[in-house]
View 1 (cartoon, one colour):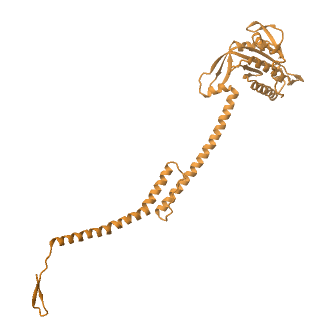
View 2: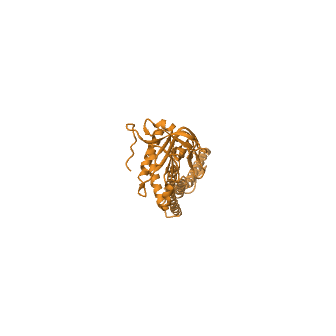
View 3: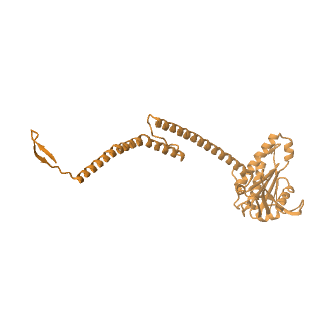
Length: 343
């Protein structure tokens, strides 16, 4: 309670003030909550604003730089950072872009070098394959490229031809080495072309001797007729060459039968034939007359309906004794004769 005074400070009454404790407590709580809210707003809001500012200014560019680096690491050398600020991060981004550009340029240079080397390697492989095909039949070359260690086959039916230039020793003695090699090169080049056109296989040359086979390495039932045509064409090719104003001559022998064929050598390959058929064909050539094509009885029986031959003659063949032989003359008319293109 408190007295009520007049102007003369005399008590004229009493003032009674009643205070409730729970009201005060509510007010105190309100003040505390308000203070907490104000404090939170004053601290957290600036912190949030600072975080947003730092994220935009620092963290986002750093994440962008990491993204660029990760793309480069994955092999994307066209990746570039788009940070253009004039600060440390901008300088770092520029440095990374320059580094990536250098990597891209170097990679492009290396790829071009690899491409050029690949082209050179392919050309070298093509040359090596062409050279291999000049030495070996195509099917045999494929087997060799497949790393087949032992290449050997038995063919039950094949024709073998041996040809020799008559008087070559005398010819070569009177000519320069260049002339001799040039003449053989021209002859054998034409022989090679004829072999290819007839589907025959050139086996080898030894000096002025030329060896051909038919029916291998791919079997062909028509090989006797093809080899007979080859022999006649070889005669015509050789006859176009002149020696002291006279045409050269060739002596040819042919036989057919089973042969063994295979590749020998490890560094210098050769595809060769073995067997009695090969030996007999060689003897047909060496025992024949100059300018003729001498064939065995076995071979004659295979071609007699398509080609005209001489009457049989008995020939004493070295290592074989007496054998019945024939001389191939020409292809019969109306037998589907092969007509080579004019040289």
